[in-house]
Length: 481
Image (cartoon, rainbow, N blue to C red):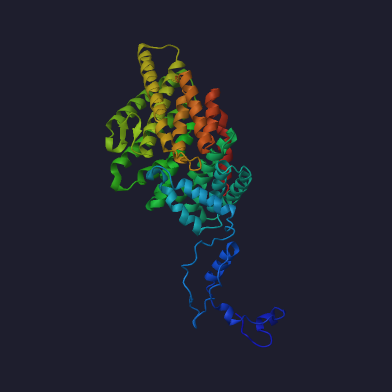
């Protein structure tokens, strides 16, 4: 604050600078020059009478116009638009894309992002949002150079996350867990090699560690429950893909995440995760000890699991499934529920068939089970393929507004359907084409990698090298605690 001391103010004397004087108080008075500017614009194109008088300020600085503006025919616009930084453009693209997803139950966690983004301007969350936005702009804005900026912000977010992991308070916050989830989403959207798939697995493992640290109290808030719901599907896919059991913390949180206001839905999702966990545990045990004796014991367990899963699906009410027939669904959440069920049933029957195949002899009971498993698998493949048109319908005709949730919801069920041994070759080729089309249309590049794996008939678990990848994840996340 200038003290107006003559001949030099105290601020200038302390800074050892020459005092240039004081601002004229008349400069602080607002003047309305709209008429004068409008006149100059008109004068440049035609002969106009004398300009209107300049507006005179009142004693209190309030604008006082001396003549009306009825004679002004054209609007006066700025010569240049205000510049917008690439960070703001990236944030705008991100919020536009992820705030317009198809189903409230799927996109619900994103409604908290604008508040968290504004509250933590310099954070891992803001960095990964910028990275996701730039990755999208590089694809849909025809600006490939932005991808290098996206990569830089992604690695900045990784460094900031590592700093947060060393803080006992920051490591348990919602924004840290959400940042890790979005880091996995970045890998999903930019995935180009199997190495990116490993990075996605790393982030899912990291999220599991954070869930463990946060404990059951995270289920006491709405954002905590929605974050878990968002992560739960990723964790299921991660466990199925890597042939590992579902972590116990996921079971514990799953039972506490839904409010009593939706008991039917809570019961259904909890039961479905139980089926997923049973399959993952059975598959993991076979991966560590495979022999005809072990297989003989596993077959009845797998058959029982398949029967229980099919019976359970038949008991669900139409209010929960919201299936309208002919592969029409009320919303994306309903489609996700159906396809997750179909995907799991394909995997269970694949497990049954693979274990029967290693037996020394095939009984009549085994033959009957083979026929049943084949018929059920083909039916589930048909159901998943039939739902593709619904997911495509959710994507906007405008390629700049992709429905990321729709692609994320269908690409893994499609991959499992195409990867099944019983999938007809023609159907597999169609699935590969759909995965490529969806990946190119929406920029979810993980779909392109899954298409490549499907077309080559490769085993994703072997490609991921589970043991080596998991060891690196443990070192990365647990060294900080």
